[in-house]
Image (cartoon, rainbow, N blue to C red):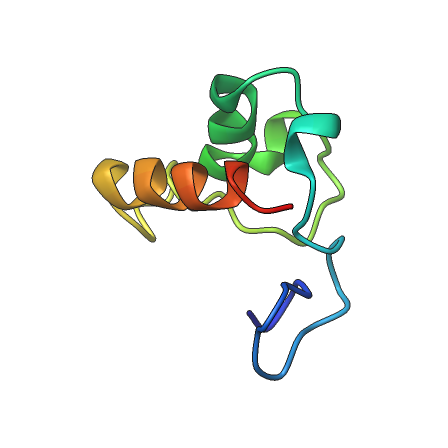
Length: 73
């Protein structure tokens, strides 16, 4: 929440893009998952930490985040 704006989120951030309509930005949930796992693979200059690669969150949590984000309008 500190980095992205999200509908009904508290204290939205503006470092990253708003988290909405992700199916229009990613071809599949797997592509979104890869982005969350390690965004530096796609953009070495990103400020998004590699959440999975660095074990910031576990795989089950990444799957839950992906499912939640994929369903946002």
